Length: 151
Image 1 (spheres, helix red, strand yellow):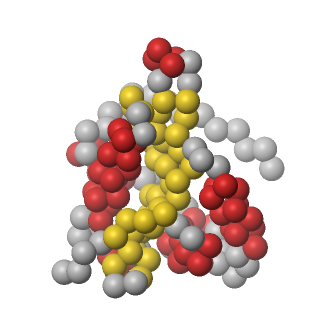
Image 2: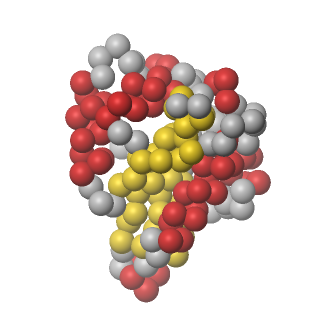
C-alpha cells in the first residue's frame, strides 16, 4: 500500500474536500459541490488565519481525507491553548483502512507540537459509530454541546 501524505490544503483541494463533506449522512442535506464559490471564500479565510490548519490526506496524488484543526488560546486552564478538531472526513473508497486513526493521531501530535494542553472535538449525536471511534482513540464524552443557528 502506498504511503499517505498529510499536508496543508490548497485552493485546488477545495473541490475534493467539499465532495467528501457532502458524501455524508448530514452533509448530503446541506452541502453541494455544484458551486465552489462560498467554499473557496471560506478557504481563503481559513488559510489566512495562523490559528487554522486545514489539511488533506493524499495517496497517489488523490485527496482521500481531510480535517480542520483550530488552535484556541484561552485564559482557562492556566492560559492554555486547545486544539479543536473539526470536519474529519475520509473518502468512501478509503474508509475502513485506518486513515481516520492516522488523521486524528496526526492532529493530536500537531496540537502537542504547537503547545496545546488539550485536544477536543464535537460529533453530531446521530454519529454513533464516530463516537465509538473517538472513544477507542482515548477521547472521553465529557461535555454536552449546544448550538444556535443564526441563519
